[in-house]
Amino acid sequence: MVFELPKLPYTFDGLEPHIDTRTVEIHYTKHHATYLANCNKALEAHPQFSEKSIEWILSNLDQLPEEIRTVVKNNGGGFYNHNLYWENMNLSGAKEPTGTLLSKIESTFGSFTNLKAEMEKTGLGRLGSGYSWLCQKKDGTLVVLATLNQDCPLSDDLKPLLVVDVWEHAYYLKYQNRRAEYLNSWWNIVNWDVVQNRFNK
Ligand code: MN3
Image (spheres, helix red, strand yellow):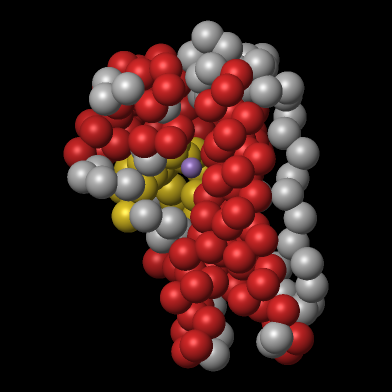
């Protein structure tokens, strides 16, 4: 099995001015691509996993041989988390949640505005590197949480709906230390059509 880098749904300048062209290019062609390469390399010698999806692997880390478990957790997570991050952004697409997803957000957080504030607060509070997520639990309820480094919510039995990367490499060129500004501006490029599709699955 060789996992592949998914094609971006836009060009490198497609998230301007909220995320600058150079950041998207480096983030995708260097950071993301390196996680992918390291994940493939670790799994290369273990063909028993060749038919498994990355989702299965991250949901079943305890079934991996111990000598590759941490490497796959970090690099498989880095591969998959970035797949979701790129996919749930676009200048086009729905700019707000609607329908059953919106109802669920309102019953859980009070309002869409509150959800945004919660994800920003969670992303800002993530000391060091990681992500801020909107996820769905097995019982259907929604939750906002932060993960550390390249940890993936799939490993905690959560379904990821929306993710924002808060590693410095995601925003430093344009925003320097102003993570809050990046997080606030980021809502302009969230594609809620993608979030809705994940919620429906
Ligand atoms: Mn990143």
